[in-house]
Length: 232
Ligand SMILES: Nc1ncnc2c1ncn2[C@@H]1O[C@H](COP(=O)(O)OP(=O)(O)O)[C@@H](O)[C@H]1O
Ligand SMILES: [Mg+2]
Image 1 (cartoon, rainbow, N blue to C red):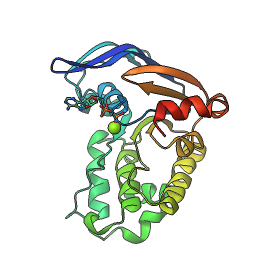
Image 2 (cartoon, rainbow, N blue to C red):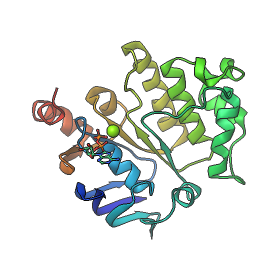
Image 3 (cartoon, rainbow, N blue to C red):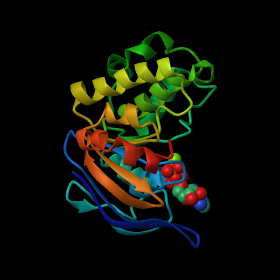
Image 4 (tube, rainbow, N blue to C red):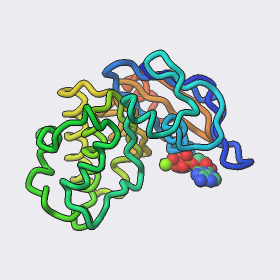
């Protein structure tokens, strides 16, 4: 349903992505692995229309979306959860969730429906976003994406900065979304094991190029090479 072909991206005169091609099928969950600076965030931002200078093709459900505004891409059913989460610290959890409705004003889910998908947020609805733990903030950022009823969610390093136990419960949250809601995902991660447990296939980025792609089983079998690419 998403097909990226020959994508290049630039920040000013700095050329960051080179000929990136990847596909995400309907209901499929795909990992994008790579060390810090490999170009993972730039790939997501380029798909989402957040990088000013790109070339190549980004096809979504059969039509080209490269060059469209982020709000237009969001309204077509692609949601983006940024690396820094961008929770509004003074707004409550419920208010933070409602902010996500602007992606799909007519078709958005009710707050209660999002809480059913992310039960860990239910007891926190009236808390200010700023007092939540890192894991809770990540769940809230995901909930704010889900409220717009997306068909594809672009997740940028959800496990980053979280303690191992929290990463494990976040993994369960993401796995439930994938198995129960049928939402497609592109999951950027440096954490190989976390990402491979949650995805069907993976691509590895290095220096702005896709250097490897395969099923999660194939990637596991190559873990030595992959770890070298990930710098671990
Ligand atoms: N806003 C920016 N301006 C200039 N260079 C950037 C900007 N954002 C990222 N870069 C550079 O682009 C490359 C890829 O970065 P990024 O996509 O953030 O990688 P990753 O998410 O894999 O860590 C890096 O070399 C980084 O320094
Ligand atoms: Mg990044």
